[in-house]
Length: 267
Ligand code: MN
Image (tube, rainbow, N blue to C red; front, side, top):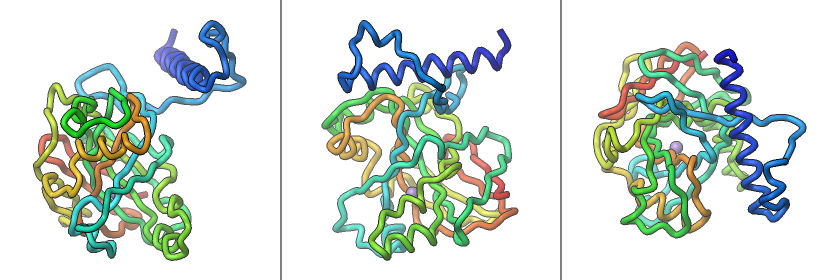
């Protein structure tokens, strides 16, 4: 079996597993019949490589927190002292894996004339749950990665101004570049440390992870009050101030102390 075939079969098996689990949960099929479920086509599971391992992390859902650094909340026009956290999702199709020490082409998306970067720490969960207490929350984190919450800012604002969902500004193909996931067992938890982003060598965003309004543990606890969390869920933990636009040809470098840089070129 070729390497490619192995990859395809593994993906199919994973897909079947997910389908069975959800059907069983919905009462659609019995456990006995579950193994016999056949599908007319396969749906590809999205994976992110795990650093220092041949294993890959299967992504179930992508959650993002909004306005989680005070200065960024202010630049987006809100008062950070009075707002509870809010979350949105991106589809797993939004994942664009960016290998470390490589410049990866990132397509400028359709429909926008104001495409923004947002550098973020990403927490990847390998344990789910409901109403997870804050003091237990970090036990649910498998590892961390560097990520970008790329945003069609003009569409986000346009839809927001009309009081319509601003999903089109946030949830689209390739809008979630991400580096490899580093297991907590190797790199520990990221409660503080520098987070920064430069465009063409000029620093644009520079802050410390400790400046998050809601910590990763608090985000997990809050999210798990709204939805049951599952292994494979990942959380983009918010961006510091000084978000801004990129154009084709720009080189965007993201850094978090303790992780290798993530670099994309807008094409
Ligand atoms: Mn963001």
